[in-house]
Image (cartoon, rainbow, N blue to C red; front, side, top):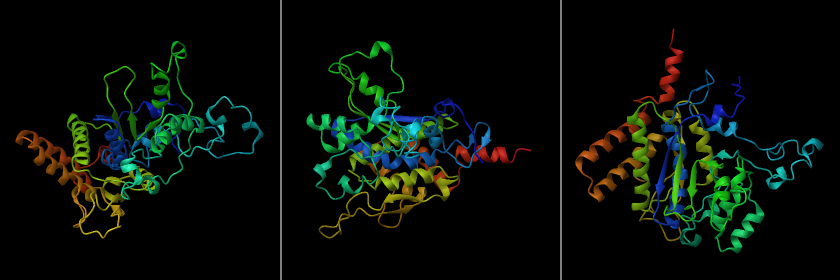
Length: 363
């Protein structure tokens, strides 16, 4: 059965929790973008809160795919369908790519390319060639302009990928403005590419720095839960930077993780691809990358697995020790960490499970 929702607002009217990080410079922002992208399905699963759509119980626990469908404005040709139909030819030349370039994803989706250029690809554990393994269509003219302007290949590909879409909204008084002093035209495209993380350059003429926006989490029922997800996401980002951790896995596996996160009870029953070693093991032989990945439960990702994977939560508390965190703050963070741990262990329900059971048990 299908739940038919015939308006964009059924998707874009949904609530969520987003966190934006200020970074020291462009290099840190690109690194953080890549690392956080791997965590977006995990945090989506942990925060699952959308089991009801248009008054009906759905067979999914989260909102993401519903929003993706609500703003999926790809033509039949862009979807790879009906390519030979006369009615779909010659009428969309004003669109980006002529409305015919195959686009595998909606404009609201998981990312399609990592963007960090760590050590110019010389480090085997962060070489993007093996991790960027999903099709990432680009606007060739934009890519050529960026490369000619000195932008490196990974970042040029990311920006050119945004420009395979058309703008959705534009105000008449903001059409003829100089791109040398304003970034409005870029932001018009950037702000209507809704991905799980967003890389945000500084606006022209402002004191705002380089930022990364974490976008996958669902809104919770209580202030405590929303604070927990916001604070723990910030702390995990600090851990990634302070300990120079490496979470890279192929983007095809991140996409698989997004699909898993949509399933009912995924936070307890789901298995997610995750990196076995967040830092290079000391006992690796020369030439070995230590970049293996395996299926883990959310509980294992948070608390650790075996002797090879320490877990994100223990790393958070190691970071608090390193910065000399005061006892009162540490106690509050421990409460937040317990929420994560108990949800992943099945001891506390997600909002999605609570709502589903409330409906199914109602007389």
